[in-house]
Amino acid sequence: KAGVTQTPRYLIKTRGQQVTLSCSPISGHRSVSWYQQTPGQGLQFLFEYFSETQRNKGNFPGRFSGRQFSNSRSEMNVSTLELGDSALYLCASSPWGTGYNQPQHFGDGTRLSIL
Amino acid sequence: GESVGLHLPTLSVQEGDNSIINCAYSNSASDYFIWYKQESGKGPQFIIDIRSNMDKRQGQRVTVLLNKTVKHLSLQIAATQPGDSAVYFCAETEGLQGAQKLVFGQGTRLTINP
Image (cartoon, rainbow over all chains, first blue to last red; front, side, top):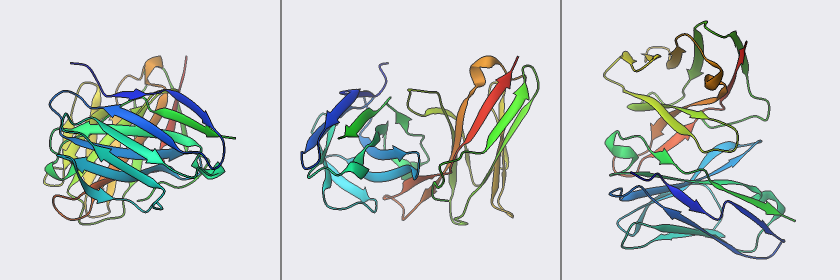
């Protein structure tokens, strides 16, 4: 079974731009979660989608948004990029979600650098 | 608890020795815990999980111990190998049923000495 696939692997943007990251979950997984990883803050939860609906959201500004499609693939968007948005963005999938005592399986992330 | 800190705790062990990585969690209501391994340039990789109704669970060369009284989790790796070198994260669930999230610890860097 193919793992979680994230594209692109690397992105360089400038302040003020917007960016869209893509995630394809493991086949059959309906829950997709996004995390931001930085050296200073570690791994922080952004949001979770299940059946095209946002089920949970972390403490990030509204510039961070996401969506999920009917095939469970997900995208996240960051608008008006700031230097502090430079991070590794990780996507994780599971069959039904964290609340069902199932491990989330991660992709290798998209490394976003803001100049 | 929430991930914090730029400087990860580091554990150095000799190849072939056993490793014990510790984690303190913050939410006494957490009912599910996971250990992940993250190698350089990769995403976290699932190692083992445990539910709050258990105090021990074993996998291949790994054992997770859960002490709910003191809110402590540990990962034991037997006969460590060079490939075990990585950052290890514990994670706990937090939130209401059906809308839970994973909260990660700060991580521990494990280095294997030949």
